[in-house]
Image (cartoon, rainbow, N blue to C red; front, side, top):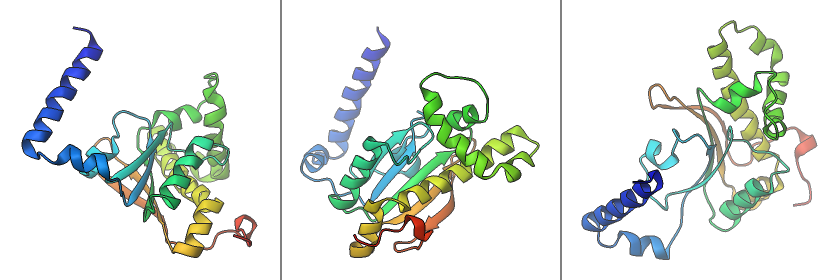
Length: 210
């Protein structure tokens, strides 16, 4: 059996079990999507948003990329954010990184990885902003963990810099922004940073004509 066929078989088994447990499960999903949360997470296969939060399909709107980045030129991410905030009216946006992130570790090296260099440069910038603190950490693992936390914080700040979030804060008083880090070793999510709706940031990034 081809490996991909096992995925299809698993899907059939899963769908059948869902209907057995709840005959209306798929009919509900087909007609409504009103999640309260937008999850911006890492593409790492070990960090599935629904599984680690114990939620069901339809409860979290999900965007994933390498190292859970919020980059101001990423039209994909911004389109997801626009839709989640202005159409789905989510109440919370969560940036969730994870300890042991390969993207973060790659950004700490000087190795060229092709096109991904352009993506990882954004994480290198976070390192540069906090170089004194990070260089003082002698353990490479601990340094990578701290960079993971600082990166999550920076991506939450990047959300707050968008006109999408600022306009929603002004007129809707939502969403609340969260920065979390998931521990692969213990399965626990660690909240590390929050920005309630309306939080002021550096005036240089605040729009005055929304």
